Length: 228
Image (cartoon, rainbow, N blue to C red):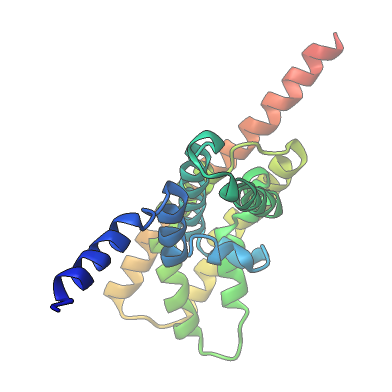
């Protein structure tokens, strides 16, 4: 007796009986592949002020992941997935809360402060330090564009603190950093390039200072109106 057709038929029957992956299963496979929460599992320390651009990109990815999972309503999922979906949403909510300071504290983004920290690192030569700072100055526009996008609900006290920090930052760029540049004996072309980036950065820092002040004064004026 030839059992091959019977065997093949049995395989086809079993294959037909296999349950297709659910929407949640497909989402979970992509989630595990992309690892969108890996950035946020670390502590939200001041390290992220170094690159608000990266933080912004990761925040947007977290928001997209959350939105995707929210669209998988309980009604279209097997009941066995309901609890797991809610657990993932709750975990992402906890991460958003953990990193909430990046959304409400504009003083965390302080490029002149970071440049001053680099300048004070005496373990490397002054030209090397200025080289690192020059790279940061060249990135100042994207740095502060990202910072302003991230800060959605600035706290008044933190807005005022940010304004104060950036006033000091402008003084650092104008005096201390300029003096260090004079001492570095850079070739003329490199010095001119540095000075040009320094001028651009001061304008960008002034713009962020105005951004922080506007938030503070808006809150102050609203409070004054409420008291009347």
